[in-house]
Length: 555
Ligand code: ATP
Ligand code: MG
Picture 1 (cartoon, protein in one colour):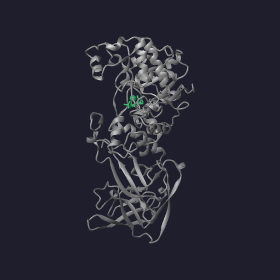
Picture 2 (spheres, protein in one colour):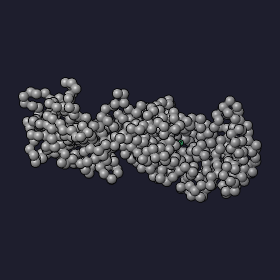
Picture 3 (cartoon, helix red, strand yellow):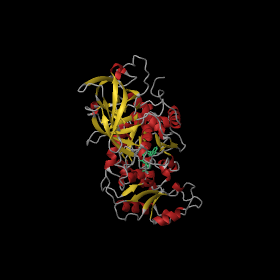
Picture 4 (cartoon, helix red, strand yellow):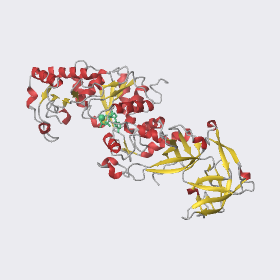
């Protein structure tokens, strides 16, 4: 019972299919693939697909290939190849052997195309794109056969060879499968298999000027790699028919253990877009600072924001796999990271919107070192030293001149509050500047209250955080909110019109001195403020807010 096949294996319809296939002996190894097109950075939807493909293969002691689906040189770039490799590794997955590229199989695709031509199952078509559209018909109207459909095998072989040798201009002709112009599935109406593109490819340079279409290249790539379960998103449901048609008609691949395609629903996340085209637009139009802007739902953005790989894998498990399209609640993503950091992030204190406190009865030049736990529930995370002196910073929001009521748990004139990890103080008076803003709050402290309650039975309920002023380190805080003001940005073609103007607010405050050399991306809980991590910018000390301490979406 403790084999990998049975442990920690959430069931879903794909795993049910795999179980059955293994039981029937259809395959003896589960081989999956993750096939991104290198035309953008990976996003949270891809993360779901990565976790599904790599995670499922791992569960069954199989493996997963990372294959770049690089059949359209127009939009692809090596920058994207590299970022995708990084993101998959960072998520904690290893691909089988070396990375694969669909372009590795360009010669194979070509030979497969020749086989289909020889079987009278493919032909070179010279209809213009307008004519092709007209001949295709509509859902209600059957298509018409292309006049080129009945060219002889020899004619087609010659023409296809000429296409390959660059003798036709781009757009002049294409290679099409000869299937059925009357099919109720539009994609089966003689789909294009190859088109001409005079473009330098990032892997094969100028070796080819004909490029296979996704539908042709994908199934053959899967078959060449011996993939068993080819998992993709629902919009390819109809295309499954082409997938099967092509493999069935190629002798080498027409066998029972060939790959089969299964579809699941895409992940759509509230307040985010998972369209690569729209994400690229945000970057190109400089509406965000780049693909890894912490407001982006890209893997690199989430990482810079402070999300951990564990939390993203956990999120993928939580949302599950289904065939129903829906809009996933952003709070599911946020609780995945919050649960991880609540357990694992060390606590520290940061004052984001500072006001100075002077403790009048504290000795002038004294600096005390106090001990503070790094995690209130986990002693193993140890202790750190914090400073205490006559001058400290607290957050402006933790003080009001007059306490609004008895339940007020922060500092007010004549009201006591505990400073986290230190003493109880009471505010006595304030000093304002010319504009009428509070400049300094004067307090008294009770020296008997370090780590214990007042001996006379006074009850002090509120606890606020602070940073000692002479040792405090100045820091910048990026406070993020959702990038869009609409819950479902996919409804909008012009997403620039729904950008949240407050999606980034920059604040300047103070952190404990031990954060001076904080590791980039390492998460901290700034007590009472939220979870933060250091940004990788080396300009100064910048912290990105990952998520708040509680779910505040519905407030
Ligand atoms: P494109 O429009 O450029 O094809 P794409 O989002 O389909 O964009 P791919 O690079 O082709 O991007 O995707 C790689 C894999 O990730 C595919 O198998 C695809 O089904 C899967 N994938 C993409 N977006 C999502 C999503 N939102 N949810 C789940 N899986 C996704
Ligand atoms: Mg795609």
